[in-house]
Length: 288
Image (tube, rainbow, N blue to C red; front, side, top):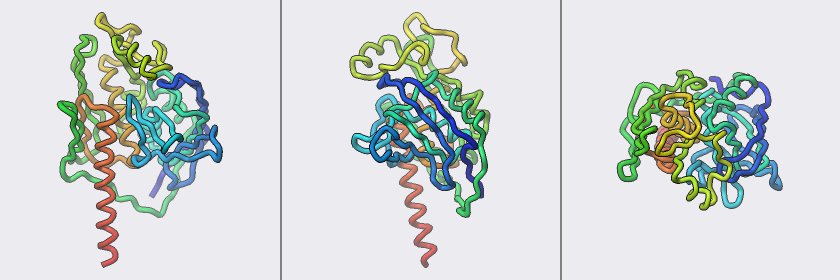
């Protein structure tokens, strides 16, 4: 069986969305079976933070991994790019607490991965693809996300905003379709009337019209959009990044409506519990 890692090194420097601080990030090849993981090279002993569901420590307007004072924030765009491009193993060194936002999408990450190249790695482990046999649901009011039985891995998303320029949008993307052109270029977006409140709350300090779409009552402040439905495509980007924390994507149809990072992670935790219980059952059967 094969896994994949990078053929070369990637280096990017940029401002974090929420903290507004500049960080340097290096992505390096990693050995087979090590998975995707962050290394805080700015801290004593360079603590490692695995890109796993169990490491999620916060989901307020982004996904944060870590424990206690050691964390790395806004990991979802980078992880979506690595996972969707098939990079199983990667060492991600960062000299701060937040991944650079770059242009607000995953396009630059995908371009960097393509330029660095991807190489195969042989493993003796034979992975058993996890299939979802019964629906798994998480909801908060009318917002929900679910994993439905399916023959292939698909991500579908719906959003609904009162602002006319956004309105009701739906999009669906099948794993294996061209992530680099269909999902990766979709940028993060914000609502003009919320910006002042979020900034006073200590959030989006690094956001600007250069790295985020902003929508007001009169329309978009910084057109043109890359897609007519760019906002909902970006929500799929976030979902792919959050579910990449499972390691491998289960075979299922992931369907979300008006969801959030918090709901994404709640679903991932439920799926992770299912994976663990199945592995325990398999272990018991092998001992009988």
